[in-house]
Image 1 (cartoon, one colour):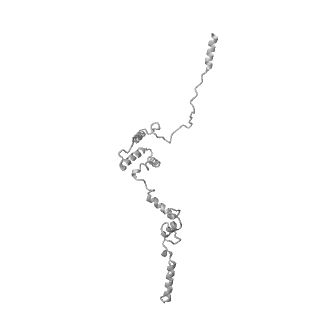
Image 2: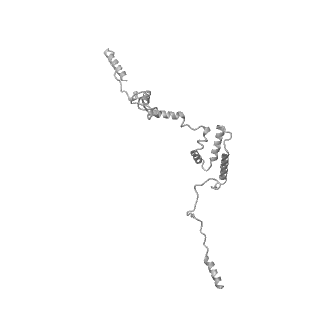
Image 3: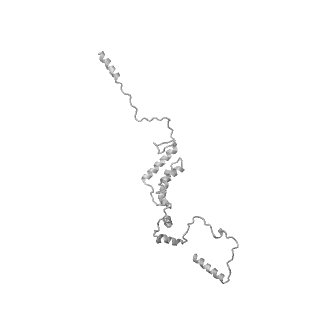
Length: 211
């Protein structure tokens, strides 16, 4: 830019010396928005006035920094590598039973959004459907999983038929349990009343005196 400005200055001076005429005077004040365009978003300042590729070459080769070094280019390269490898992508639907359906967060959300219900059976059935339809497994459940699904089906039936049913019959605990104000819990069983030997002793004494 400095060399270009010098060439223009020399050309203007040559034109004035030849009698071409002086540059025209400004007829108005030039506002900032006429030569400065406001950008939208984050703008990285380029104080060195270097092109992007030249700056990348100097950072990674001339100054001895590696491609994944602690600089802006290493951060950009790491972000592009993460996006390219798919680290942030969701798992495919044919493996959703191993990831999403098998996570504690999914079960907690299902229990939260299905208040008063037991969605564990639906989760197990959906996992079997994923293995059957998307993975092509003809027998998507094992014998233990079949028993577990039948056990959950039995629990759901008992809960729907008996609203207040509790632990000995189903694995369900209520958090609002009414207990007496003063709860006495004995640590040991009650001590039995001891045997009174004096009654037997007195009876024996009378019998011995009479003899």
